[in-house]
Image 1 (cartoon, each protein chain N blue to C red):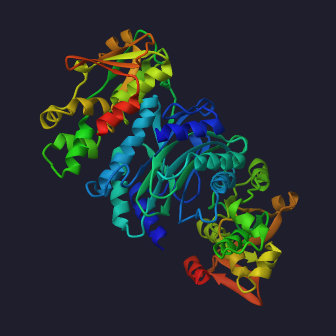
Image 2: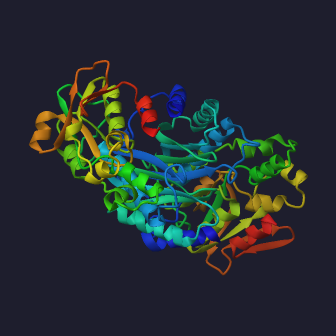
Image 3: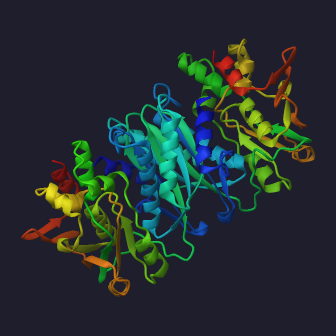
Length: 306
Length: 306
């Protein structure tokens, strides 16, 4: 995987103190920081996305990262790179979407530069006040996996957009205007007494679970029957919906490993459990008639994208 | 000016509480934040810049912003966008340059994405501990303008690089590996008792002074005879060196408006003074045989770039 090689190269120069989680937790300042970039024709296409939707999604994506760390989003800087042909109307609509997405988060600065393609790079700063910050390495044996909402919808929506087939509004909406529900992450960060692992499913449910398992040196058993997905997904993609639920990205759902009693106490949806480390970081049960052992995420991705 | 129109559009949506200074000062967290992007073929060309130099310059540029706010640089996130054809050696050299440039600043995170052109977007976080943070609106009548080092060298170096003429090492070095001297900004931020205006000359000396004058609702008189520049600049560009000194960007020198007694006490180089607001925000005296009245920066830029 090209990205992994690059990350290892970077680690070899700057060390790995901060590399691992999606957000950096700076304890002495009491803040969590996350920076994410969206590049035209890599992460989105203006063929099917309006400037408003781009702004909205950019905002949600970045808020989601901080929320999944357990932090409270407070401030945001926005770097926009725009081709000269872009109108000020584009900027206006982008910012309208952004502002609608981020609630009371304050945009405190940024930068505008020229470029060939539209590019958005956003940094969000959150605080740890009255919250416990998560780490993907904090899952423990006996913890359970909890999540909120439906998985796979965004991947389904993207497929429909690319095919110019507007047949399912909820799937398309999930891709263009992802709803990021902060209730679960907030409840966990504010109330939990133990260390825990939490991420958002920006790169897919399997990706989150695989990363938590390997970083925490445990294994995870996911019960596919417990995972929610939109009925349109199964209807429209009968041969592929299961892969979409497991491997599709950009749903931005909360996925966390927390103590079982805590999950029950808060009535969270439990979809899996943490077991002692085996050779299989992620085992998916109730996967059709059998189970799916994921030992190499890259191979699964390649399988999925074929 | 396209950029100004865009900024006004953004202001109309998010307000202007934080727009104005290069860094955002978040008082309740005691931090200053700055985000800057460098785009290939807009801000730099890999034809004449090595990956090491790009990393080095990216680091210095971003540190300079925070230092000019008066803050102490502490943490950095780095978003890199890279074409698929880029080798891991590029990333290695980039990070080596970056690490060499930033001293004890910690790289705490970031993001790597694909793109057509190389793009670097860096966010730096500094603290206000034991320091007074500047604002470009804090210059006052009776203050003087102080600066450190030579102006115009980077513009001269760029001209030589574009012409593939390596005749002056100091000018080319100034462009590719800018030295950012933090002594003056640190001394000011740690010792000054009054509010003050400070910026780096990333967009040129005239740009800084014009912005300070208009934001602070004062006028500035700059004595061109007092401004230092490299002797090579005059020798190589006898017809243009004065414009380069005044309007050339990317020197990253500290430029500040501080009380006169403070400047004298610290033996700072004084190059101008603040007077009550007139119709001319920036007057340059000893400009050849006469003086230059700058009332519209855009016109001067256009003149310069012809």
